[in-house]
Image 1: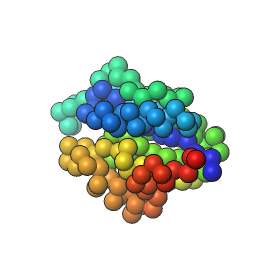
Image 2: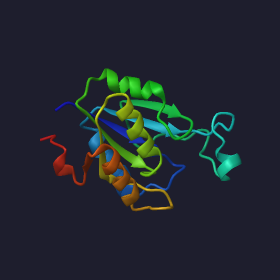
Image 3: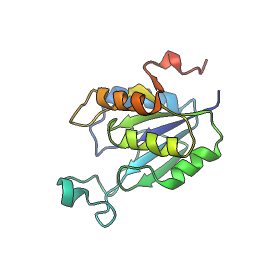
Image 4: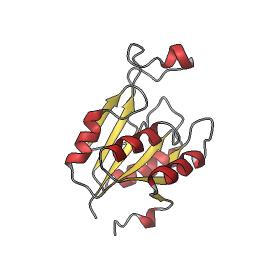
Length: 157
């Protein structure tokens, strides 16, 4: 099975447990990977005005990836989705930060593009609303079905 990894917003602006960064890093070293990085531009996405919070204007990915795409807002940029579609993969493994918002938004974008998004629950962190990521995983399972709970389910061996 041909797979790619989408790493969502694993960056300094968000509290990312070291074990998540390390786990994603180990996986991105053995599978083609794409990362998104959320950067602040109030003229594009009104984070500060509406939420009183904003990501940095110069964050970088905490995990090395084959390609990095900058985004503004919850959705991955269309160029990232087009790039993943161009890889002709059987499924896109998704991990990262904000399981019930940005990670879920990536799932919708991938699904709408005809790709098969698959959440890696052990490598996904929720927001301050649900740091465990359980809410995001439940929403993901409801909308897309495919949630893996451990690395032995990846089929990489």
